[in-house]
Image 1 (spheres, one colour):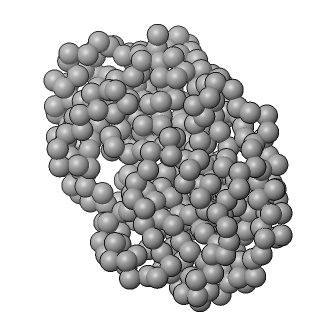
Image 2 (spheres, one colour):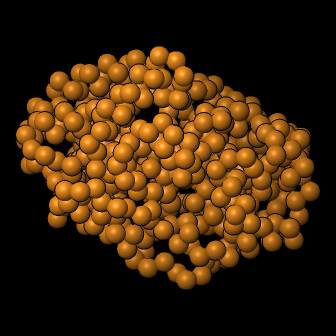
Image 3 (cartoon, helix red, strand yellow):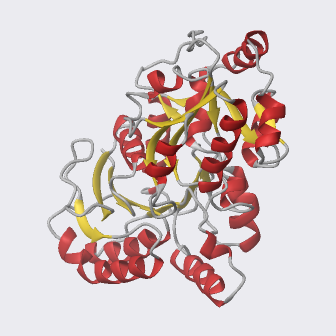
Length: 390
């Protein structure tokens, strides 16, 4: 059984839980180690007791650097009781630095996989800091065996033009993970809530103030014909007044966190549309990513809303689904959605449901294929030619 040491920047990130589930479903044994964003150590993630590397704070770059430096000194002692892994997966740049320290602690040539699912705005700066961070990434990634990323635009706009990583690339999209062994051939047409009001769901990492203000302005213009349902983890470092803001808006509601994948069907089938827009790092990461909510919403028949000039917009346009906005204004939203009625919505939803759910989901077979590709990295001397997961 392939033994993976998974080093992560935030142990409690729901995406970390999803990746652990994929690896274990595919037949790998996982040891989890990483930082946390909580005051106390996290006792359990998917039945694993994480190796705690300390606390970090969201959006505090200097504090995170200090935490990484401290962990680099102590990681050898923290890992000394665990057997040597077959493979190390480092999620994000700071964990790549620690992966090399961990490998040294084991005193053996353990292959390293670099998992990068977001391109941080700091590495894209054209000043001394940005250049130093890119140089650091190139140095740390010089001998990684595989780069795992989630969007073709990350490769086209960052990794390839800046020549950051020479390793083969594995495209693992942010798809929903199916608990069932076999995906159904045809998605079930599930009736959503009665409209109006039309309900737009914004689920996941809630970090975009501009989206929040845009949706609030739009719903006020619509005077109750549209409602916004928010679920997930608000980034209070970006808008510390999140809860007060939502409370003051008559057509916005926050339902708290949810479990992925257990709650996904219920929360998406309770809305008509899925908000697949993010301006958090506009023109850069937010324009290039293919977010979790894109796949999750489509899997359960929610019609996605996206900006036309983004990777998500291009993805939807190629498949002739969704609602695409030319501008991020309440007026543009009103033009696109304001006249919504049942017949038009039925056509939009039918287009989403017409696609095979495999477009939106990974199953057990995909997990096994991923783990097998990782296993082959431990036995091959030459770089492995890797194709993207379909």
